[in-house]
Amino acid sequence: MKKYEVYKNIRKRAVIMGLPISLFALMMTCVIGSLLFIIFSFSFLVILCVFVFNAILYIALTHFTKNPALLHFKRVFPQTISNKKACIAGILKGHSVLK
Figure 1 (cartoon, rainbow, N blue to C red):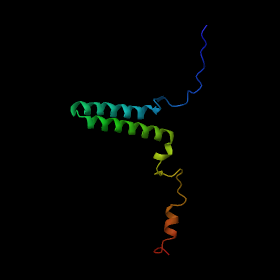
Figure 2 (spheres, one colour):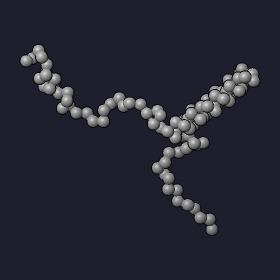
Figure 3 (cartoon, rainbow, N blue to C red):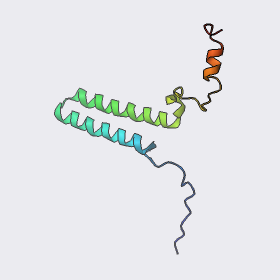
Figure 4 (tube, one colour):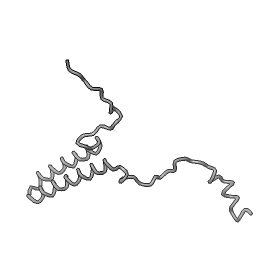
């Protein structure tokens, strides 16, 4: 009788070829676009450039997947919003015109 293992990594993201689904879709879109580019402008230099571009794109996407902090930018909004610092009375109290 066949034994089946329990899949315990249910909370991990789905990965295809080392890329999350969205980045894999981006990679496949670039591959299809580069194939169309090769078909309509057929030359040896174009073929080499397209293969190099796709290889560099794949390496960059896997690198960003392994190190997501590379694409982490400064947050636009603060963690908490409080009106203690910016209350109207506090602003007007320090204002020189109202003294």
